[in-house]
Image 1 (cartoon, helix red, strand yellow):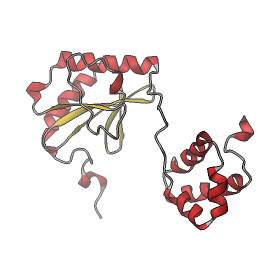
Image 2 (tube, rainbow, N blue to C red):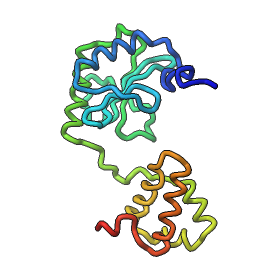
Image 3 (cartoon, helix red, strand yellow):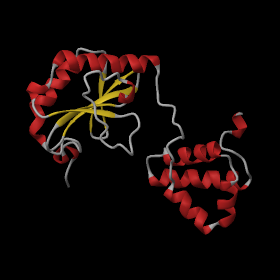
Amino acid sequence: METDSDKKHVWDKVNQWEEELLFLKSIIDKTELVETIKWGGPIYVYNKKNVIGIGGFKNYFAIWFLNGVFLKDEKKRLINAQEDKTKSMRQWRFTSKEEVNEKEVLEYILEAIEIEKQGKIIKPSKKEAIISELLNIEMEQNPALKEAFENFKPYKQYEFLEYIESAKQEKTKLARIEKVIPMILANVGLNDKYR
């Protein structure tokens, strides 16, 4: 039975950056960010909002700026690791501790905190589509449900999908689906009663 500590962090696939990551942490400690562990790696939050994350990979270690798209990035340090997938996240990669210019890194982090304070977020041009595999299965088996679901405006469809998919566990998702099916069939939006 392997424990979590055996697995090491998902991000720290290669644990060769221990010292470098500790150095990054020491820089981050000078800010008001609070360290939490999410998704198997250290994430630093301001006011419960994720601002940056750090992690080590095979060929580099990196700082993620979760809302990095808003950073001015005058020094052109940031990259979008997955052009097609991530709209707001940016990464700053290093291959050695020497590459980490503390003053520069701090400037970027402080700017990222400032952005968070201003509450800037990418207004999704179109909200990232959420797909609920489980709901799709239900709809395949029940054409009336599919038709009823498709009659909702996109934002209402999104509310249902977000409600289902924000559940962590499969059984909770299924319970939520059970709950919304009658609503969908009755053409009642998830939040209609509050509107």
